Length: 624
Ligand code: ADP
Ligand code: MG
Image 1: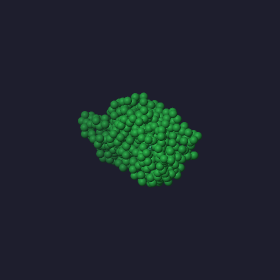
Image 2: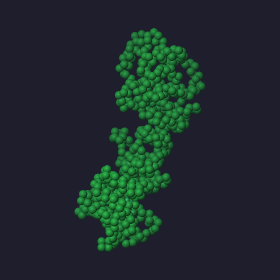
Image 3: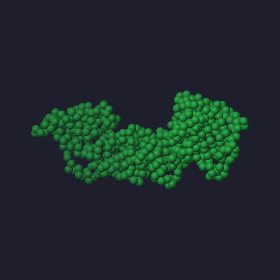
Image 4: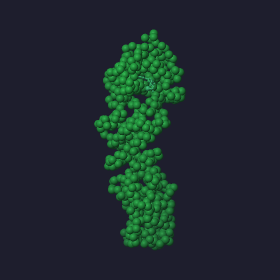
């Protein structure tokens, strides 16, 4: 038929793209198959839509499917679809020009990428023209859905193409690729199967390679929720998450505004990072109209949600968007914000529905949400609602939310208090909770070193400041009346002058170990405690550094802290008295009180020095 064929020039932009595509070497050529299959799927989606509105009669019975056939001997690859097809005019505009908006800039960028790193081109999404990565010659035979005569388009990717009539075609498009010598692998069945499985599994039409259906899982995220069974969801989770278990949570949501979104997200049961399997890759794949754009996408959810598995599909995204440009694409950023907020909201809803399951989730994945608070200001508000901690009012091992804390705050209390410690027993027997107990004020127990870091990053919740109970400037609301009454039989404090002189002396004894020794107004029973001074490293920071083994953090070198002593405590009073008789021994006691307070603050002391001193003290006691 070539006698009737018309030879035409490619539009100059198209020629440039073809030049780049043909004259570069590719490491990621596979994607040309993806481009052609996605075009085929698009054409069938269009037909599916048309058949709803226009009721086309020509070839109406032809089933919607994609057939991929190959000839390993002739080195050809054929992709046939039963979509809308193209008329002669459509062939000319669709496969002769570049419709890309701002195509000039696109070509510039493409050429740039080709110069820098040839593997980038593959990701650029040059669409149909990508076929020339692997083709000596491309033939497109197509017949439009309206039944008009069929046509054949042919080109070797040089400056021209021909269009000629072609008889005997069914509705749809057949693309025949004569493979380049170095691209013969694409004439092999298993190569094609592999590529389809990798990129096109969720194409919602059968994709057959040599007659065998290769894609088994359909795009279930685009189906109506109540038509999908739990089993189907689980199957899909296993597929997309490479998992063997069942998901803990599932979120299937659809939105039309502000963006068209179909998202199906799963939370697994296990945290493989905590099981020592190394850092996880992001688990969510980005699709556009059921075509995979970005596998394990780093752009669609923040890094700290890398434990989430699933699919996000938005038809607002341009299918040909490159993975590079996903990063700073405004639409993608918007999508990321919407999806992240929706996901966090769904966690809050799950917590409301079933607190026990949520606590299981929290124990497994809470660490990721904490990472989110410290690394991502954008979602702090949503994340704050999801945090859980033990508290003085919770049962051992049970956790509460900041909201629960706020809901039962006392009148006159305007802050949320917390204290870090290795476990509940250690915290409750330590000095920091005494004044809270006495005043009947709830205090959160933060049991992980990172918790204080998280809460200080958060700063406040519901406009209430989050305050660590080991701060030197801590003030608490007045104790309730009855607690005050009970105080009447409380021990007499040392006189002001004695207190002052005692503090001064202790500071001399402890030297550089402390910034200041002060009389406490808040200690109830304990003799002393270490408190943090603004502008210096806090105890919790120091504990984190110690946990990471920073050598300069050994033995309290982290930052100067104040020590508060309890002037009504009997040991302190006895020490004040002893000081007048035996200053050396009183000094040992002062140093021991300091070390004890450091231990209660979870900080490192010099164990050898402490043990030696402890023996000296014991010997004295035993000898009397
Ligand atoms: P895009 O898919 O982004 O539009 P392509 O370069 O992949 O860009 O394809 C260009 C156009 O050619 C498509 O928009 C479509 O109109 C047409 N086309 C390509 N393949 C087919 C096909 N198999 N069936 C019908 N039309 C097709
Ligand atoms: Mg395309």
